[in-house]
Length: 457
Image 1 (cartoon, rainbow, N blue to C red):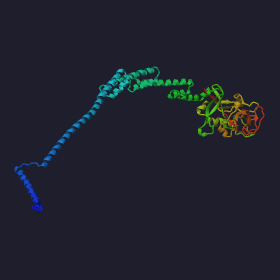
Image 2: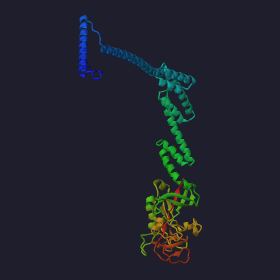
Image 3: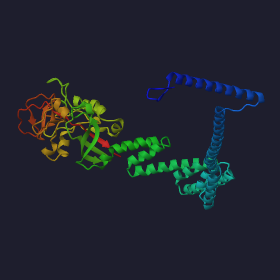
Image 4: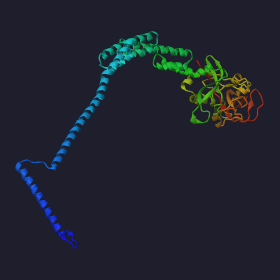
């Protein structure tokens, strides 16, 4: 330091730095000396004293260990609680399933058993299996069930309620109880005979559909199959039996509407007469276009009902296509009389045996009381095959009786008048039977109107 011109003391920077440096050096020396001295002392006494850093690390380590021990204790406690809860949830259901519930069911079954509800008790004891004496009690219930069923079955059997008896015996038979198997067979035979008797009653009462149902249940027993066919035939003709004279019935089938896609239509018949369990039927419509005798050769051959093609068509083509076997079996073969036409002396030929025939001149007068009743409409198929019809839809239909000579046959016109016509159907001149004057008309487009006798009993 030095004095300035004003007498103030001025620090010398260079000396201050030197002093500072010296002091620092001395402190380093002292510090080093001190450290060296401390080390010498420690070494000389064989005792190690922790430094401040070591003490801190030790304290931290002890704290961490304590914390770990506490966490382990907490984990053990939580795990114990969890296991206790799990044990509760596992053990309680087990106890409930294997002890409490079985006891409850067992007691319930015993109550049912004491009340006589053996079936319910039996089901519960079977479910309990070997719990306590459940198996033994189940056997006791089963015995009571079989005994009751057996007794009830015997009662049903005595009252001829064989179907109910069989149902109960079948339950006892499962356990080979007494003679259940033998009694089942006995009831079955009695039931079959009972069903047969019911069918016979239905036949007697003319309830053929019901009779067929009973007989089908015992098919093969006695003459059941024959009776089924008999009932089917009787069922076919039953409407004919019940019909009044002048009524309409259906029997057989023939294509009439001209649409073959929908199959043949049922034939509608008029009941003209009934006698000796037979009915005379005449088709309501002219079923098809037909000439009396297509094989006739003018002026060289004479035609009769016996030889004409109309008869052949009716008894071959028509009959085979229109009727089933059962229907055909009901159509009687009858004697068809060769009758003269009133007012003519023409030889009608020989009688024939036919199932299907055309009415005679006399028939047309006996069974129809007026021209209006004799009028007939041709079917659509007949019209499409050139059969004539007027603006009201009425046409012509053939009779089997001869005209004024054997080249002619009689027919009914669209007004219901009986006329005669050349047998091949193409004579322009016709004569009204019974001497009425004739007029020009083409009667070639006539129809076949079949008739037949059907037995209905």
